Image (cartoon, rainbow, N blue to C red; front, side, top):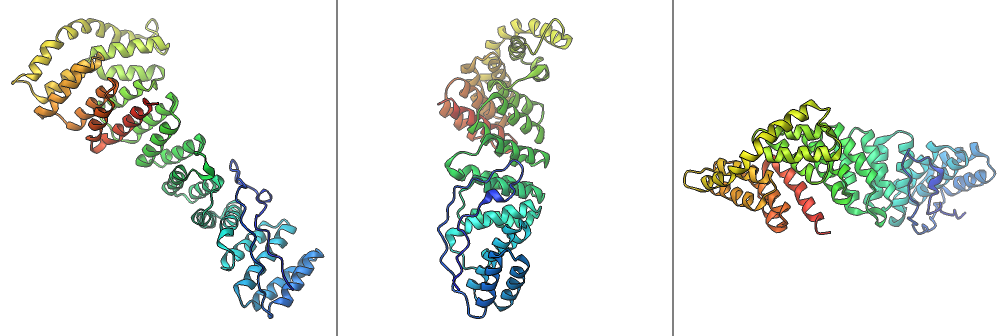
Length: 410
């Protein structure tokens, strides 16, 4: 008896895919060579196959059990698994199909080129059966053996989530971003899924990486806003750091709603009226702030209007003092911030560098703002150098700025 090997390409449409996940059927593995059945197992296997043809499923199952006890080789075990798979399909029995596929895989007879397809099917069936550990095992095996099916990565990510392994789920997603399975970038919805999983699990570094990757691949004000707001919420940022995050949010046009504008203004209006005035004006222009009906905004506006003229008039003298022998790093930083608030970047850049030279001010704060001033004045290479010098908790924000700088070349 010569058994015809199971089809090399499983009809995955017969297997119930996970909700929202469609496994692309692009991988066509070559047909497996015909197995050489041992003389001990041959009679039972021939009887099982004959019973299957006659739709005598009970006899087919009994003969397969008999053959299992007599199996001598991987060829035997592969054939048993193949017939069991066909028997499971004939009866629409997913558990039997899964057992057949797993037996084929575990036999060691299956050619390497066929492993991705069979592993995918085993993983999908396990997922449908809510056996996430087994789904993880076989879907991971599919990828390790060379699967280029985007759906395999998606389903493995869902299996990891089902196992309550959010960090590993995000790791699978990040591998998909690099691998571009199917030859195309991963869709935007995958980023959203990974971000949601990471945010719920409070995985700050992972969320930072994924949101940064998303704004690099799919830049939009909405995605930038999600990235920077989640970054601020998942990290322990002080008031000054929060202001710097809002500055980039303003640059990428991600400010939305009166709360964004007013929280920004509240952080700067006392010492940086020029910046506060500009942000208020943008909020009014966007329609998010209506001075006539918003008492808080009106009060902020009244305060900054009384401050701006005198503040501007004091800039030159303040800069001279900061650069002089009695000036200090913190004084130079404060003056640089004032110029920055008026979008007067040349003197701001000079004073940030003075602050670094004189010392006494946190160099990570200074380099963050120096990088921003350089970036906004079109000095991309110098900005990259400044942001590259930022270490510690502020390094994440610096990396977001670097993404924005790269996008200005397009």
